[in-house]
Length: 120
Image (cartoon, rainbow, N blue to C red; front, side, top):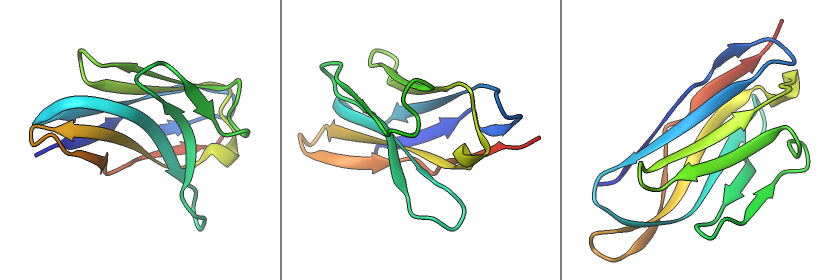
């Protein structure tokens, strides 16, 4: 069984920074693309950033230059460094990972989400 668990969310003032972490555990053979999504209050979920296992990144226009996605495959961790946070960044942030489990099948796995609130 594969699990993703996020941490690092919380309340931060505008202009502040947070680093989210996503830890993968369980029967993992390989990890492909990883990504962070967010769902603002009353809105649909949107992709924030993605990172392939070859190092290619992609960011939503709204976070370019402020957010950085990274990964440590040895530790099975995915990070999202968020700088210059704005009220519009308030959302539940979730990580997603495309994982090959021990059964050699690729599946998308999701974490439960962590709340990020940007407010003074």
